[in-house]
Amino acid sequence: MTIEEAQIDKELIPILEKVSDPEIPVLTVLDLGVVRFAKITKPNFVEVKITPTYSGCPAMDVIGDDITSALSENGYETKVDLVLAPAWTTDMITESGRKTLEEYGIAPPMDAVSDKKALLGEEQVVKCPQCHSTNTKMVSQFGSTACKALFKCHDCQEPFDYFKCLI
Image (tube, rainbow, N blue to C red):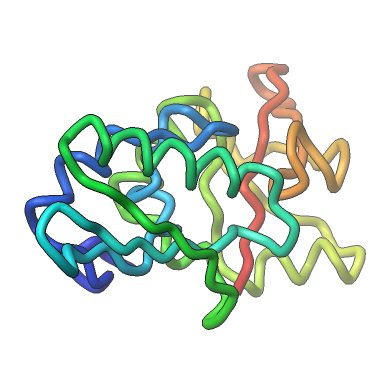
């Protein structure tokens, strides 16, 4: 999903671009694609709808509070609602967000077929974000957060997180 595909008033984009994901602070809430709707509905009042990356995501309360604070600092009262449908998918991470993840050292999500291989016990090929080798191996299905898996690169010997694909 692109920022243009979300229903966000243009004047709110610069404000929301400064709100980081609390678990991956190099990503903004817009990069991550969790903001579905942000509209000025009355003078100085904004309604925002956010979708969790997965059901029960502990960061959503913090994200809602951070959005409210950022908009408040810019003179807006805010109502933030959590919406569960349609469900968030990794397709909603922007291209910029994917590049930022890789630069930060987290392998961005691939496609659903690649992740299904891991669930079926097949070898999953994930490119190392440090040296770009595909000579990698999953160490654990769960990394630093539930939405990431832990991998190790056999070429550079570095461990890294892989942001699991959710479609």
